[in-house]
Length: 417
Image (cartoon, rainbow, N blue to C red; front, top):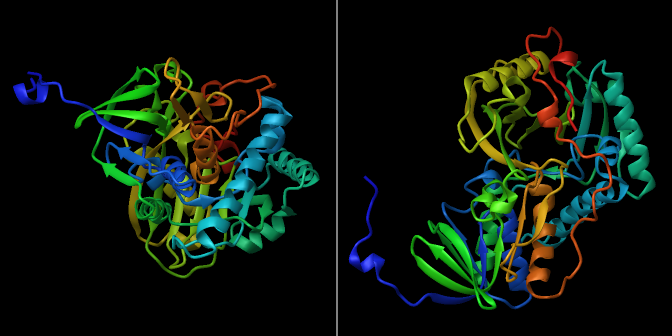
């Protein structure tokens, strides 16, 4: 039987009147709140669960420029202008985050700035060719990166399963939860507020303001920023079909000797890995093993994908394969058909804006996206975050059939856009 509210809960009460509300205490929401405090505002951040409870606290902690897939493929799909903007925004994000918070020591989130690698699988000439051409085109527009051949990659990793790679020396890895908690602390010290355990059920226009209906009562806000990523369609129905929740899974070994520096995307991002300062080896991906079922909102690791991750570990990094696996987890990413975030004004509610669909790159885009949202909220930004898409957009996650039972790594891991 459904719960019925008491007389006291059902009674109308005057809503709490606030200035700017940010819904979502992940990296995008907290970045927005931080930039709002930098301009003298005191935002209220609401989250149904806790700081970095979902995607922002469940990823591998990559602070990387660009995307895992080749730039050339991205250009074919969405056009040169949008692809270039995505890469340049991620570079801006890295420099902003490091310059504003990490390098000055305002937040300690264990940043290890050893560079990032985007590597092909050994023997996949097509992947290597696309990556090498991508590097040439990115260097021509001012991105700082270098091509490393397969022999150099083998020396860097000790693995004969990896081929040539793009190396970006200014990228790195961090602890994403410590980053988000650090930003939450800065927001509160600047006069803002972070309330967790408050679920927003609906938004309504209220003249030139926004009414937020929550489990704890109603709020009346001058401006609202929605930073809910995969969960955005619950409050923004027009995003149904645009935002697809996709589960990513990760495992972590016991600490030990550390031989691998940097953060690594392999096979167009289907696998990603790094070693922490204590030698813990983190490996994520292998979604190809169960693509049809790795969707939805259940943050639960599965035997099938975890088994595929263990197999990748054994075959690609045999010297690490005997380490005990100490932790397994899952998180929900938000994918869009063209690989670009969805950013804009909530339909019918002009005082509310949103950003969602970070496509697994929230750490690499969130701080700069938050600054844009803060400026837009304050009336200081009137343009668009991304230019219009001009390529032949298709959703490769839907078009690419799952691989099954194929004998070699070079065939077992299908490519995607």
